[in-house]
Length: 412
Ligand code: GLA
Image 1 (cartoon, rainbow, N blue to C red):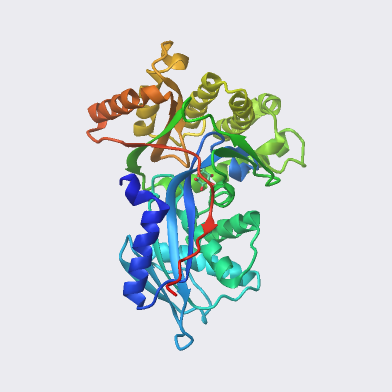
Image 2 (image 1 turned 90 degrees about the horizontal axis):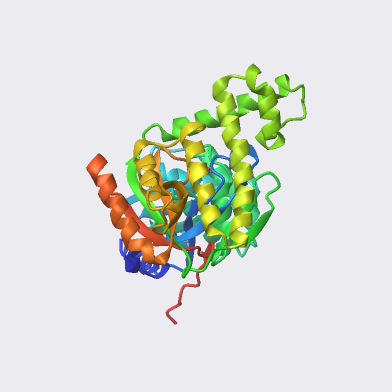
């Protein structure tokens, strides 16, 4: 998709047109929320750890209008899938087989759980966040929708609460056991900044991204979607929970609640008495938390070389200790490494690279000098093609601001 197709303005125009032609009246409400990549801190959010995502300039856009009083149902339309759903919100809500519908159903249910009754709202949804690419297309949808619902009610929904509601919405209806990172960044991001999130306290801190004259962030989509991704994700969560149980017993420390409460030293001490798989998962999480804090220090000191080294180290840990990478992601990161000082000992413009998101396919990110973008892109495409017969989709992105309600121009 070209930039003219992925921008909020382009999506908004298409959604407004579709709404008007489908419903015979103009939309009066609109909201947008972005996708994301995570720069550092992978598989740490559900372990009460640290993450450092940015929101990217790919969006879910939703436009809507309160349904006429004569109608007892809400009509929801996915423009990209060309699928319509009639939601009867008077009935108790249940998950449905039409997958995309479970996201809005989950959000409606969250409002209800908080004693907020929504009127029937018809809406049209469209998105430029690629689905299944690990760029958080689902949080973009739930957060955009929660933003539009709050706007419709004139309700001031705090962005952190919004993120928590959206996380629960995903747990309860689509049944995706995601962490808090994706809705938090979609909700709270600010232009030009990464967001450090302490996933235990939900405290956040903005970390200024390097100027685009110094560094460009490339997103390389392997276009691989592993069927096992959701079950493996749930399996990792469970392994971490069991690692915590073992650590509690081995270290005689009942107060350990999550992997956030253990240090690298604790792990060394417990090593011989623990299940080796749980140990490796714990090692990744504990070290990834340290890397996240260290990499923020590097970013703040404008030391992109060091930041890049942490990216490579994070990838190795995700590949070997946490085992959530795949051959395509490893290849992209290896190819990027061949253009870097950190791995190849020769600086051809790459600072660092790693997989991003849940893994098992999806995207790698590469931080490189602006003058190296063409070389890196070609090198990765050629190298990937040579090995897998398919080309990755590569595009540059930058840190954008998070969810916003959009005022729809009235015709009077
Ligand atoms: C998915 C989840 C996030 C996070 C990442 C891994 O994107 O939705 O909550 O756990 O995987 O870091």
